[in-house]
Length: 231
Image (spheres, one colour):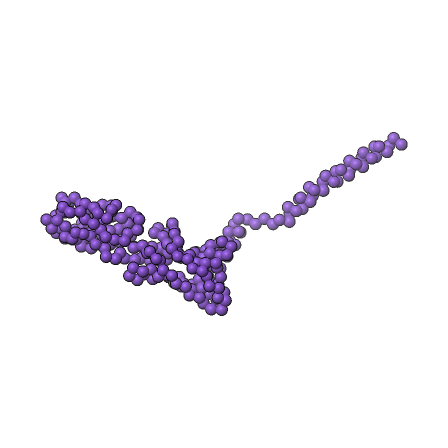
C-alpha cells in the first residue's frame, strides 16, 4: 500500500516531461519548414525581373531641334507598367523628373510614345526613362545624352573700349561656368568664373585687337565666338 504514492509521483513526472517537451518539438519542426533564401539570390531574381521589364521598351531616343528636346520610345505587345517618368541630369548621377505618361496596355500591337522636356537645359543633358510598376518597383532605360546649343549667345559690348562692364546673354543652368579669352594664336590671355550676367575685365590685360572667347563648365563647352577690343 505504501508503494502507490511513489508510483503516482513517478507517473506524473514522466507525463509532465512529455507535455513540456511537446511545444519545443513543434517549434523546431515549424522552423524547418521555412526555406532560407540568400540575399544574393533575391538580388538576382530582382535583376531578372527588371531585365524582363526593360526588354519590352525599344527605340528610346532623344531628338534635339532648335530649342526643343523631343523624346520617343515604343513598347512591345503585352507590355504593362503603371506609368513612365522622363528624368534628366547634368552629371548622370542626380536625376529629376520632367514629365510623366500613363502606360497604354495594348496586348496585340506595338505602342509608340512621345513627350518633350518643357524647359530644356543648354549644353549636355542626360535623359533616362523610369518604369514604375503597379507594386511600386522601378526600372530604368538609359541614360541617353543630348546636346542643345545655347541660342542667341552674345558677349557685349563687342567691340569693347576697356572701360565698360560686359554681359553674357545665355540660358545657362545653375552650374559653375567660366569664360576664357585667347588671342588669335590660341594663347591664354585671361579667365574668370561667371557668377553674374554682368562682369568686369582688367583693362591692362587686353591690348587692342581680336580675341576668341569660350564659355564652359566642368562638363562641357556651351559657347564661343570672336571678340574685339578697341581703345
